[in-house]
Image (cartoon, rainbow, N blue to C red):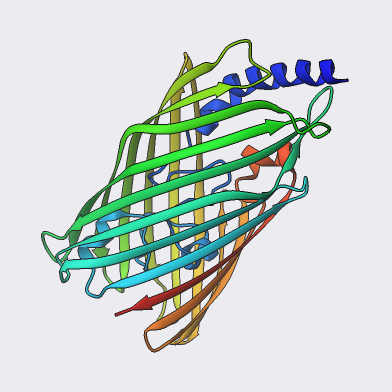
Length: 334
């Protein structure tokens, strides 16, 4: 039985390097798509609308250009919990602070994120399943500058980023494979243009290189690979009325490495309805993944909640099953 488990581990490892490793290169410190889409550096409010990164200003923005529009300081803390049918449970904690260096002219945002497995999940296979767990750490810096009232531009970097993935035998707990990935260089560029009626057109471009190494009982020797990923996202938001905000966004990601090239593209769309100035309801779609949310404000505080069904299902549902994600966020502005 143990020999068959090792056979399955070796087969699984090489399949990962051929197919999943390009997806691992999407584990970006610059808020590009993650395998589970938890570290995406956006907010519970925007996740409830579909997960926008380009065109909706918010506390904890993903487009670094919005740092140039800051007029007040803020702090945000978000906790995300994702449960899969396989038993895999992921917990991500994200905190950020944004500070105007010169009000409505230039500013800075600092974001920290930590993701861990609370309970491991089973991956399917031809012989026996393997138990998988994951962890990730991320530090991102965003700087934005507004040269005139219409435009703002920004740049983002991540001096700290690493992920670790383990595959273990569900019977013995033996480590069959370990994957480690880290970004060696990369950046995010962003731009926004303010439209009439509180609307924005936004653009984000990512370019980064990631190295993935693997070892463990399923390998005759350690293996390493490098991947180069580029992402483009374009979006527009528009206030349909005093109470309704609508937005749509298109995103495309291409990853190259080891003679392989993979890509993915999709749309986000969402609405925010504010029946009263101090609370809101939200609904959205991220490439077919349903999302919804609610938020409330009082004085300088706000509390946000978002729900996501089968987040990034094309990448993870075959391995871990359906998923439910719940996010809670608290913010303070001063």
